[in-house]
Structure formats: C-alpha cells, structure tokens
Length: 244
Image (cartoon, rainbow, N blue to C red):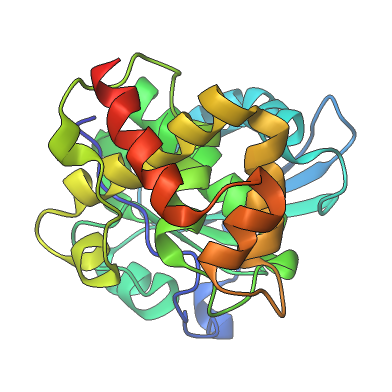
C-alpha cells in the first residue's frame, strides 16, 4: 500500500512528559458530526498542515469505525502530531518506519506522516482510530495478527484479494515488527477480509471480541465459538478463497 506501518495495538508507549504535551498555537478542538469531540494537538515544528489533513478526514474515519464496531466507543479523542523525531520516539514509542501509535489516551503521529499521500493517511488514521476505539475492550495479550488485521479491515479499501495462495499464512509477531512487516500486515488484513466475505462483517466483529477481549480463550476456541468451524478448516477455506 506504500504506507508507513502503524505501531502494534498492544505496544507499551511511554507516558507523555508534560513538556511534550503542552498544546501549541496549532492545537484546536473539533466536534464531529456524530457528536464526538477531537482535540488536535501540535507539539511544535510544522505540525499545522498535517493536523489540517487529519481534521478533514476525521468524520469519515469515525463513521468507518462506528460502522464496524457500533457507536459504543469513547466520545473524546486526542490526536497529537509531534514536531520532531525525538518527540515521537520519546512519547510515541515508534521507530523510523512507524507513522503513528495509539494508547488509551491518544493517537500520536510521527513527523514523517506529513509526507504520506492522502489515501495512505486515510488508512493510517482509520487504523489507529479503530485501535483507540476498542483499546479498553482489547486484552494486552490479544493475538496481534488479529488486532492488526481487523484494524486494517476497517481502514483499507475493500479491493479484491491478491490471488497468491502463499499469502494464506497467519503472520507472527516477529514478522509484524520486522523488515517485511508490510507483507505481514497484508496477510493479517486478508484473513479478516476472508472472514468478513465468508461469514459476514458481524461475525468478524464477534471473532474479535471473543479472541481479543479480556479473558479471551485461544484462537481455535474463539473460532469454533463464533464461526462454528475449527481453525484448520478455516485456514483451508482461506487458502481456497485466494484461488476461487
């Protein structure tokens, strides 16, 4: 997709020092059409252009999250754009290939996100907003490939799957953090696409809640409970979906 990857949903991010969260003249508040309030905070540097681009896309991003998850998620949203790489490393916790990170308190964008195209920014914003929306209901030890795959399902255009059966392999945490992370994210996304296409979007949400919620069972149990099949059969179906 030509985008910088976002940080893992469960990644621990350092608490923000007060000196790095003091709003600047670029900071504003915005009321979305669904009534939610977004606090857009710039931390110095040339953050205004990126804050404006994010602001323009927020209504549609919130609608995309609600369309999948329902309206029951936080009414207050904090989006912070850092002015320097050092700020982002300290507060956002991401590396040089990370566009944004999310905690229960805020969504944090790196300065490098400024160079993203509007379609790529759209994906990252929706992806991170989904993580923000479901953070309180997602366990710290939730299967990362599923949390990232569902976030991308909410974020990405529903384009046809890539007809390559080798993609039908669940990515590991190491792959999702490694040099080929874009390919790993693609596979996680295609799994979520497959579940939604085969069982329905509501079933994908139920799988997320069961497999990623607090006190969740293993993925195999969650699959059986929500999709009525076993994991091996589901993965076989996924491979067939790519070639069908």
